[in-house]
Each structure stands twice: as structure tokens, then as C-alpha cells.
Image (cartoon, rainbow, N blue to C red):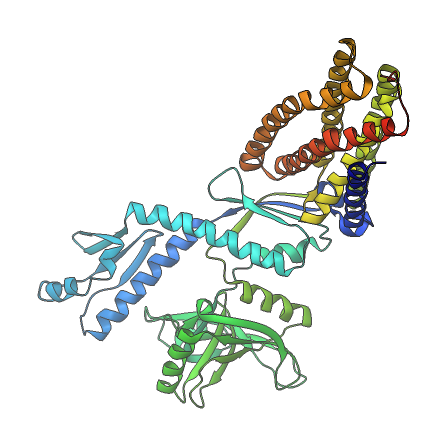
Length: 518
């Protein structure tokens, strides 16, 4: 064996061994998709009107605070819809001062006057941008939550409509917990508690003689029953405007409170700590409420300045404290979600798919083997070895790059077998043509490989372009097929030309061959 041929054989053996090492054992190193491993398929709609309503309500609250600070008396400020709010009772002598306070509001709102006052409507371009930003933020938040769930190879992507999101969670068994974590809005707010707790909502409203000021909310909350006593539900009167929100959150983690019960500790970022420190210093002796999703979880008196640390106490179990920490760390959803579609794929169905795919691939390979041996005789063994190495390299590369094996991916495996057969047929037919011109066996083999290389590259480049379009514009299963096809095509160029040629050269180097079995 020549030195050059020995080098080629060592390369083939080394690459094959590395590929086997990459995917063995396959049950630990090959990632299976939802259709093979089982799991949950969810399609959700983001209620973007919620985000618009929150933006409008926040703008109305800011304007109310600003007018109160400037001693500009106006009538009630109402929010009739998600994109507009109205200010009534603007008198003629206050009109100039009122307009002067609208610098910030009129950046995003169009103002129109009427008999009862002014109406502010979100600008159309702002509405479009807010809806788009809401879906993008929801997508990122869901992705962070899913990643913290520890799901292997989840899919979180846009679905068919602009406000729909697709979530696929392979291997998830606790479906209800996953759904609750995904859809929980987890909006954290720290607000002043003006009065409470009251035993019921009517009592809370009676404290204001039934006329609750517009800057006060009546919210349900938890009343701590003390050590060994169950918590009960009460109602609190809290300020509408929050001192800090979950957007100022830096981290959250499960912990224990002073009674050794599960709780959630949180820390604020620099800007949140600055605002919270100023706020608590100015309100020492007053009650501060920790509010999650419009519910007061705890309320305590501010004893001194607090900068960047806080804690949420309540009747939590250990699992609830962990889940709440998770959703707080991942950020609050900008809007609520509704489920449009839910499918659960059982692991047994996935196992059946794997078994059917393996049987299909094995059956195809068996038929190819019989055809190649019948039509090309001993040269058919050469093709079968190169196709086998191709499949090993394909599986090894998929495991190495972390690609997910799906049912369409198995179809990509079977198509790779077809591409390998096609390439070898081109090579063998070219060799037969060269033999027909009277060339010797070695010269015919060398000429056949050299002259067919451009044809192989041409067919594979065309297929790679198609695979690229499938990967770019396809959904999850189609992208899985495109990924498998791409890796299979690249491996096939190596095996069909380099491996197959090396096997011919290895056979012809042992003895003088006057006739080739092809």
C-alpha cells in the first residue's frame, strides 16, 4: 500500500470513528423532536389589546399625577377603550395650563376636543409598533421561561398569524404546570397601601363613603394568619401608580420568610434601587404592598430606607415559590395569552414513529443493496460501504451540532440513501463508459471519478439551495428535514467521491486486475 493510499484510509477510519463517538450511545446524545420523543404542542394568541390598554391607562395615570402636582383642576379621566382616554371638565381659564402639560402625552397620542373635554387617541403607527413589540416581547419571555424549565430543544416561534406563537416542548410530562408558567403574566408592582386590610370589598369602599378616588385601587390580598394559622383573603386600598415594577427587577429566587415558610426574595437593578430608595425614604411609617398580578401578596410598614432588596411572602408551597421565581426572572408577559390549540404526543407514539422510521430506512437500504449487487455486481459492495459511512457521518454530525431528529428528519435520512445511490450510479456508469473506450481498469476508474465530480457537485449544490429555502421559510418539522438533508448532502460528497474512490484504489492496489466486476 502506498503512503498516499494509507493516508486516505486513515482519514476515513478516523472520521468514521469520530462520528460514532459523537452519537454513541444514541439514546443519550441524539436529540429527539416532539414527534419522536413525545411532549406538548401549543398555539397561543397574544392579546395585544391588553398591552395597548395598559399603555393607555399608564399615560392617563401619569397625566393625572402631573396635573395634580401642577394644581390644574380637571374632571374625571376615563379610559373607554384600549387606545384612547378622555379628560373632562377642563375649564376655559385652565385650558392654557392644561395644554402646556401635554408635552409628553402628545408624543404618542392625537388630541381632539369635544363638548365634554378632550380625547386622546394613540397614533396609528404607535398602535402598530406596540402590537409588534408586544408579540416580540411575549416571544422572548416565553422562550426564557421554557429554557428555565429545562426542556431539551424546545421550539418557540411565530405561527401563521401576526399575534400567534407556537410552542413545542419535547419530553414534557407535567402539561398543566408548563402551561401555567408560560401564560402567567407575573406583573410585579410595589405600591403604597392607603388603608386595609378589610374583610370584604364593600367594607373597603365604605371607607371612602362609596366614592373611591380615581388614584386608588381596591385589590384583593392575603392576610397573614400568624404562625400555625392559615392565611385569609382581605382587601386593600392601594395607590394606582407603582413605585417600581417588575421591569426594574434584576433577580428573583425562592427563600424562606421569618416563619420558615416558602417565600420569594427579589433584587432590583440600579435604576430600580435608586427609585425604590427615594420612594421608601419619603414614605417611612406608611404601608408598602407587594402586588403580583393585581393581588396584594404582602403589606408591611416601611421602617427605613430600602434600596435593592425585597421579599414576597404568602401561602406558597415550595413548588409555587420556585415557579414564581422562575416567571419573575424571565420577566412579565406584556399581555395575556389564550390557547388556540393544544396537542399532546405520547412517548409511545413517538417510539412507534422511531420504529417505523428505522424499518423504512432499513427496508430502503435492503432494496438498494439487492439492486446494486444485481446490477453492478462486486462494485455494488463499494457503493454500499460508502452509503453506510455516509449515514454514520450524518448521524454523528447531527449529534455534534445538537440538531434535533424529527420524523421529517428520518425522511431526510432515507433521501440521503437515495442521493448516495444516485452519486454512485453516476460514477459507475462513467467508469463503464471509460472501460468501453478500451482504457485499462485503473485508468478508467481514475477518469470516471475525475469527470463525474463536477456533475456530483452540480446536483448537490442545486439540492443545497432548495434545502436552504426550506430552512429559511419552513416551520419546525420542515426545518428539521432541511437540516438533515443539508448535512446528508455534504457527507455524500465526501463519501461518494473520496471514500468510494479510496475503496477502488485499495482493491486495485493489491493485484493486477484485468477486468472490473461492474
